[in-house]
Length: 322
Length: 78
Image (tube, rainbow over all chains, first blue to last red; front, side, top):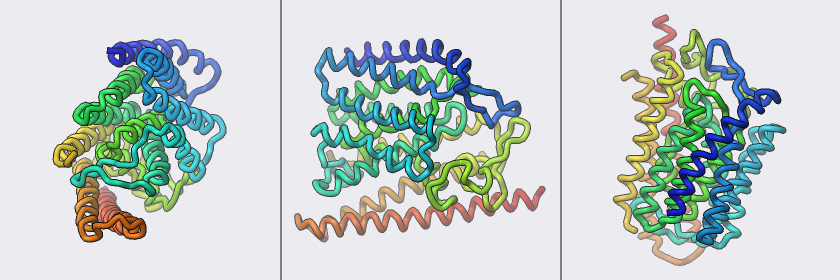
């Protein structure tokens, strides 16, 4: 019950915070250019802080009600992710340092003693990875956080796709009897839904790295604590395609400005893949390789890919002995 | 449905298949190397990761070739 109440409270609080913070951020010059619009408007940035604050307040409240340690450690990990994102927004950590630093969001989960090194592997069941699990958890956090970060390229693309992933985590957590994980995921889902209302096409706010790294660490900690790591990976396949093809085609961890050419070209409100051989291949450039598309159409197609991935994750989950 | 979106869907399915394939091979190796020995367990994980990385590489090369072909056809048509 406290999770449902907390979810509604988090939705309302995020909405309220975005409404009050967005004009303030704009007046202080905390804005980013929406490069996929013909007029390139300035949009208030770093509104991920609103999600971070409301999720933190709700998690603390839930902790005082039911003393759920899981709630507290998910909060600590996601707070750490959010702080790393905020530092990145302010000082720019760079393409190589960011994955290394973001992996530190796994520390609260490892120190909590709540994580069990027995991940549920697709088709296999629970594995015993007593030695290898902990270093792999750092890699898992870095991969998830940076995949979410890379997905935040078009209006509403990351929050809409991540919402489907969270629905998958909620269903799978309920099926394995982890109602606490399902409850916290529900709080995160409604927090994200409130943000999506403002970030969807045409975006009125941007979340910034603070938003995407916070969400990435929250999702990573929820799946690690429920031992559903591999099923989250399957649900997040479009996220990994984005990250993997970018890293592979530019041959390493690089920031946007370090790339030879932009992956896409914007013409009259339509986005198309850049035919330049130096341009990296991204999920957006793949989707627009045959036809130039409007931003909202690409986001809808990525959403469909996310839905397919979650369905595949559910099928795999049902085929796995538990 | 255009070829770009179809390529996206194919990538998701192949990504899923690669994960399942790695898991099936891991299961097979677990049966073969049914042991609690740490080094053998480490070897098992290393082999699984290698298979996974190799499949990913093949997946990436195939996707890039198809992607480049679609783009070059477009350029030719223009």
